[in-house]
Image (cartoon, rainbow, N blue to C red):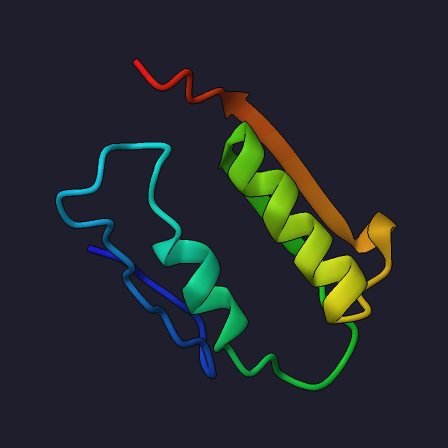
Length: 80
């Protein structure tokens, strides 16, 4: 059960059968996302290389100030 506030859209993105740490489905979904107007703040946490890629996209491609994007890689895919 997920509760959101008014005007919030929740999109569930699943990696399917791709092993954890090897899927780009989340990054592809983010590229297609239309962000709302205003001054955004992003909180990104997950596999280290994924959150780095997402932060780079948000700051470089989307123009969001680095101090408005929290990112934390709490595990690293090792390919095993």
